[in-house]
Image (cartoon, rainbow, N blue to C red; front, side, top):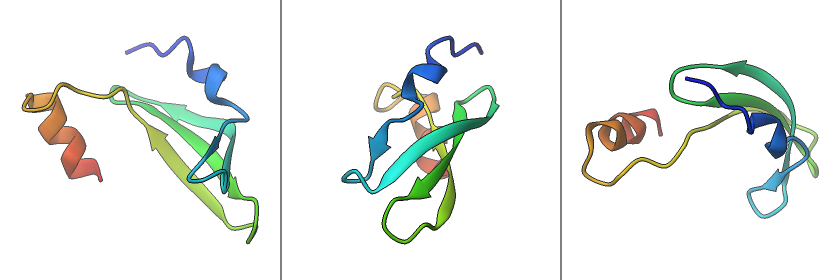
Length: 67
């Protein structure tokens, strides 16, 4: 699957503006993985972003297992 707008999230702040998405680590069939740094503690994380699936669908069930 192609995510042409995945670069659009670079620099985005998530989790109450605590984490900043700064580098794309990889792309796969279910989403894009970003390097994120905690702006307070300086901890580092990998954050997977996936397109939202339709509730009740097989894809939705698969995403729920990812969480």
